[in-house]
Length: 411
Image 1 (cartoon, rainbow, N blue to C red):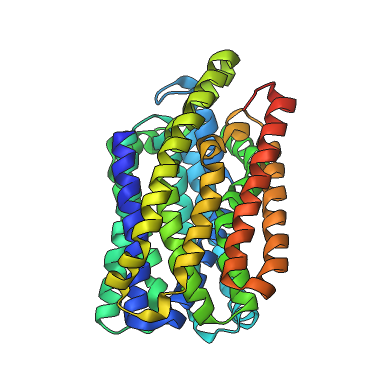
Image 2: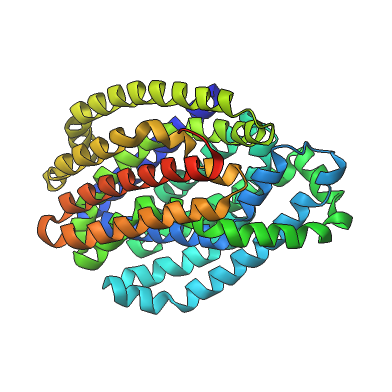
């Protein structure tokens, strides 16, 4: 928990730093373009990994490294991730013109080229990190997770210093992924697992593929949902409006990353308790986790709303972003309402029911799209923020219903 708290804090700070740096040097329109590219990268990267990381996390949670049944699990998933990442990267590259036309942005066409190059690297890293998480090597997991964003921030700063155009700033994505992949491959247990498991890899390929087919829509949706507001605002509004909104959104997502500290640590535990059929103890853990999370995040939300205007004025140094404060307040209110459930969003997948997890997220995303489509034309950025909060409430309601009906758990 401590390792990942530090890591996620750094991750959130790096995300905020990237937005404020781009905003300071390229204004609202430049920030809007960069964050649309970032949203496309986040969504497409989850498609590229095809749910394979969830297969590794699920199976690896109760098969330790060196276990006879685990041989071949990681090499097969690593190979498959490179293949799916390359395939989705090629499709994104071919679709770059269509994306530029849809968002009315020529700069996005150039950004898409660099995003497509990062997808195979991201997919491979996601699978390797899932194995690290499943084995509870949490110090390494925390270090590498933070390193990805630190490297991305460093590359972005260099690109801005050398006066790179906004459309080329996503060069930072493949650079950071390449560094992360190198670090992971040099980790001795990882190296041993990859080198000595190839002979048994074939028997895992079908198992990973079947689990991935069931799980990848949910994995894509869980990452896409927080970006739908930015993407839909990009369709309905100009880059400047997206820039104002995305600054508030990036700060809110930075605060939300604190909730992922719990989720990352809880995921393997959920699998173990469900596998051992210790439902009473699991329900007790969920109740305690919800109560503590609500209290902690409510305090964080109050403090962050109070200091947000000051931070924006100091970090960005422009009055153009003053309208982002109401957006931030609405976003933080929405997150606070459902914060207690955030650590347990992967419950259905960890229980071996990825299709139900996908159904839950599909309903939430459809609600998000519908709310955004209705509210953005009338309220603009405030409508996008309100829609995001309403969609989160819908998702939690569906989660509690499915957990009871399929697992007999009171969440």
